[in-house]
Amino acid sequence: MEKQVKQETMALNGDEAVAFAVKQCDVDVVAAYPITPQTIIVEKFSEYVANGEVQTEFVCTESEHSAMTACLAASATGARTFTASASAGLALMHEMLFVTSGSRAPVVMAVANRALSSPLNIHGDHSDSMAERDSGWIHIYVENAQEAYDSIIQAFKIAEDVGVSLPIIVGLDGFTISHTLERVDVLPEDAVKQYIGERQLPNVLTHEGKTVPFKLDPDNPMTMGPNALQNYYFEFKRQQEEGMKNALKKIQEVNSEYAKISGRSYGNGLVDAYQLEDAEVAIVCIGSTAGTLKVIVDQLRQEGVKAGVLRLRTFRPLPVEELRNALKNVKAIAVMDKSMSFGGFGGPVFNEVRHVLYDVKEHPLIVNYIFGLGGRDTSPRNLRRIFEDIVQIAKTGHVETQVQYYGLRE
Image 1 (cartoon, rainbow, N blue to C red):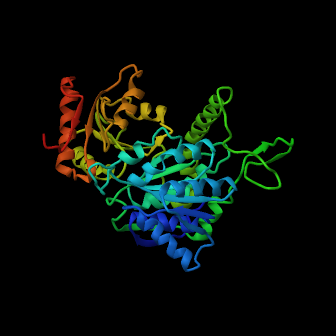
Image 2: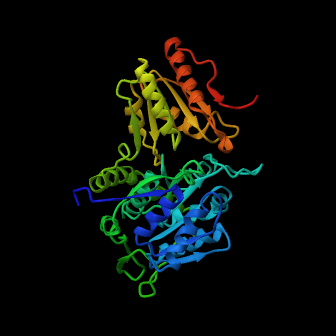
Image 3: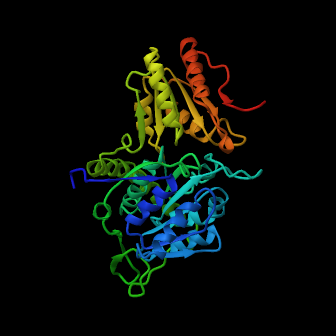
């Protein structure tokens, strides 16, 4: 498949784009519980099931914890499995996220990112999935509805690779992407199925001395997720890290392969650089904010300011070398976080980026802007001011306040 295929243009919001992608991916089991702002995803997919448009077993569970448990059980039998969640629902899954990744079950989950209580807030920030950043799941964050559609398709290809065998979160900003109607170009269903193929299972050696696919099978009994104490637990965790390392290469391969049939790629799949080749100042962010920042960069370029944007598409596994290479010539960087790390020094994206750049011989000056919590709007005018701030930092070589809360009443 080396030629772009003819595509259909549809008007979809981000949630509908996710549901349509899942519809095309020949998924065996979807287990889910509704929660704003992801409800549209499972609601729309349940319509496909009810209308007989898919041969998927849809399980409406009594909670998100149960939904992830059902997904894990289905995936363990060899089924292609999907779910969706957000905010408190994702938090309720917390225990089972670790069990799922530790069991090497390649479940794909869309997260319509939303703030966590208390106080109650239903709008978009990244506090929910960032709280799960060390749960052993791959994390991909998208910029718009088109990328949400494309990334769900790619996610099955990545997660089910035998060298990866890890679950994936695809994050889309709550309401900003999940509920906003956009143009989405969709592939023919047969092209998607051909691209993804059937789920491949790694082979393992059983207690009976047989080499069989790694799945629950009465004909070839095996134990998954056994009790592993001091003498084996460490090795299990180390294997998960190897899966993450393998994912770095696989994500790039899938991004490149997908471009051949769709005509769309997202940087190298790990990072998406915009006007960074000669940039002296840059903003690093994840999610939909990048789209607005690109417009501001275009304006600044016309004014002679060498500005750029680096969107961190893949947050786990963290693309260390790609971040270093993309930012190596920049004098000053602002990292934007739509979540907080309470009691820490700055937000989670800032901490990761600053850590990555620490050992670079001439690392840039770096500041953190925590913004948009609970869905608070950050206008293009305010985003432009951040560029103005780091232009000044680049000129003076001085950072007055390392961590700032942007758009906050204090």
